[in-house]
Length: 47
Image (cartoon, rainbow, N blue to C red; front, side):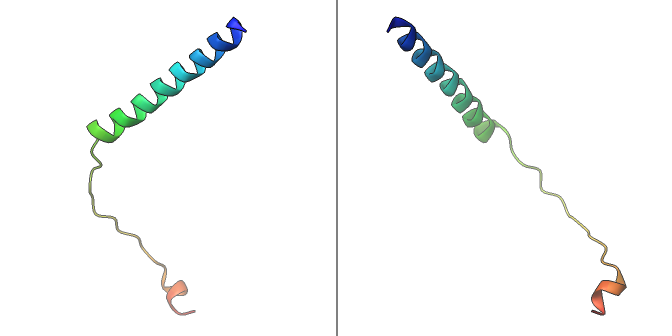
């Protein structure tokens, strides 16, 4: 039974680390806005 508690504790710690990393990405990383230009061939416009 103690090995089950250790395993569950390890899973909880790993989940907390992953959650913390995702939260840090949300807080500290800002997306960069940029203009996107897509060329459409004229063959596709005539269909």
